[in-house]
Image (cartoon, rainbow, N blue to C red; front, side, top):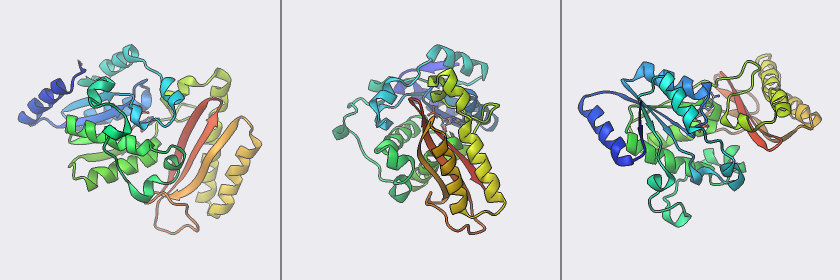
Length: 285
Ligand code: AMP
């Protein structure tokens, strides 16, 4: 695997791929890689000639400076995992390389995604999706992939990037990959590394509750009743601080009531466990 730190080196490589008509699959990440990321890499390898993974902890998408400061950095381990997965290229730029004019708002171009960014993560992390839009569009211009892979664990991010890619005519196929979970159901996440062992033991509660909610929905229970049940479960469990729990339409992420068929829904959740903010979702199709 080649590791590129410079945009110019990456672009030269990409131009050569294009010249020799090799297809490029792209997996953008923030590192501290786990099986979820590696699943995206493996899918890209199956569907493209060349797979490029990027690791960049993007400061413009963090609305919380403490979260940014504590974001795990594990470049040595990440490189070894990517080598094992036979990833072709790791793009590992510095903040200066990605943002030569700096990251102050006055130097950034902004994005407005409309209604879809206003609820859920967008409501609790102001500016987050603007930062995601900026970095993903920069990376798309640099990597110029045929296909780009995103986890459905970050459902709202996936929907926003798919919309941006279509509306801005990037000509890239955006592919959503199902959430990879630990054996006990906890959605894999780099942030899980920050849980204490006691918190880690408690964390699967999130999946337990949303799975039972999905079960109730599949047995035709009314959304309001199912939602009230889920919220009560969290009210009774003082280890968690619930930020949001909703049953939403996957088209616009607005709350659904009553169910209309045929349609697709998702149960979406964000909750704090100790100092760690965890998100998860389950699709109901
Ligand atoms: P991150 O490094 O957290 O920014 O994630 C990079 C990519 O991996 C994003 O598209 C995530 O949605 C995806 N991802 C993270 N965790 C998982 C998971 N447990 N299952 C599937 N994809 C994931």
